[in-house]
Amino acid sequence: MDRIRIVGGNQLNGIIPISGAKNAALPLMIASLLTSDTLTLENVPHLADVELLMRILGNHGVDVSVNGRRETQNGMYSRTIHFTCRTIADTTAPYDLVSKMRASFWVIGPLLAREGKARVSLPGGCAIGTRPVDLFIEGLTALGATMDIDAGYINATAPKGGLIGAHYTFPKVSVGATHVMMMAAVLARGTTVIGNAAREPEVVDLANCMIAMGAKITGAGTPTITIEGVTSLSGARHRVLPDRIETGTYAMAVAMTGGDVTLAGTDITLLDTAVSAIRRAGAELIAVDNGIRVIGHGNDIRPVDIVTEPFPGFPTDLQAQFMGLMTRADGVAHVTETIFENRFMHVQELARLGARITLSGQTARIEGVKRLRGAPVMATDLRASVSLVIAGLAAEGETLVNRVYHLDRGFERLEEKLTRCGAIVERISD
Ligand code: UD1
Image 1 (spheres, rainbow, N blue to C red):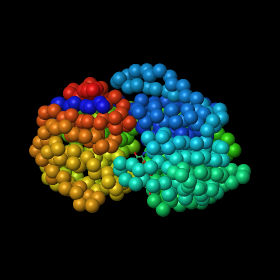
Image 2 (spheres, rainbow, N blue to C red):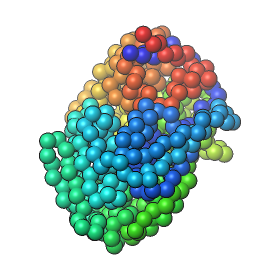
Image 3 (tube, helix red, strand yellow):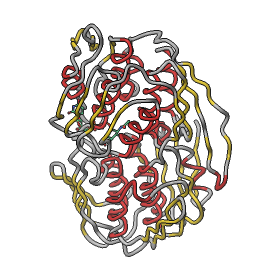
Image 4 (cartoon, protein in one colour):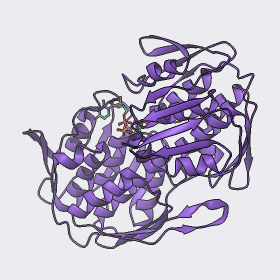
């Protein structure tokens, strides 16, 4: 199993190209099930989750054709992929695939909308909490679907004539359930109003892509989304928005190691709350043409308290990285996780590097230390693993991050991007 070896202590200087967002690319790819025409997506990141979803969509009848990667200015890669689903070949999403990636459960929305039925495995447990599917079931039931659970599968059936538009308010904000409701409602008869919808930029990206395909959607990015159903969608060409989590991660790495890095191909307005937290911690973040310049000082990191919340609040996907940054703060910081229970697995591993963190319920108290020291650590989930990488960059000596397959799910060419900025990071394949 691959490991990442980091020798910490170097500042980061140069340009880091930001990839297309994984969390936008996945629902956009799934939306290709809604039309028999070709959906072309530009700026698709090369990640294990994206490659797996291509295989899953292939099972459902999507023909995938990848345009070779082109290296452009600043070392950016541009990857364009065409998805064509002339007919749905299979409405079943089996356990062995859905259990590998929770987001593949989202095919339930378009399959139900286009074919009137779907049999999708329940996603099963997940390292960062129970992550149930009750909101998906309630939302699709509101559109007239019959939802039965049988032998670990959800059998969803639309009424004769297809799903029917409805007013439905989520009791809790969910990104995935909002994606699925939108994908189901675009082909439903009549008007759907989704209340308490997720406002994440990835929801807006999916809405914009479906609008380009002919859907009638207003209000994406606000808590109320209104959808007028149409009878069919066409193909479209859409560019995946930049990855705000990757952007925030590298900004925090520079804040921690010190240096001067331009994050290219991203947009500061995608992560206002995180930007403000990183600035309060002492780094300078400046919006530049098509990117963000980050100037970090490496020392004198100020303690900042954060609470994770649905967008536009501080993203849970940046919580572990921010905790990494706070381990070197000049004082005590508190990090509170409100989205997922059990999303503190990085705490034990950061402690191995010398961090002083105590947990009380959903809040971590981090007492900053002058220096971290490299150690072998274990990656436990995607965002936790990258927090260990950035802490390793700021630690003295060698850090070995084990089980890096988590990183490959969400961070494109991480070692290459960091090495180009002066870090000592290498992958060791056993
Ligand atoms: C998405 C992101 C993930 C991010 C998360 C929160 C993708 C591929 N993944 O995950 O990176 O961390 O948003 O920003 O985009 N919940 C229920 N019942 C449900 C569905 C969700 O109780 O039916 C709960 C979850 O357990 C969690 C909360 O709602 O506590 C938010 O989860 P949700 O927004 O659905 O996360 P995902 O869409 O799975």
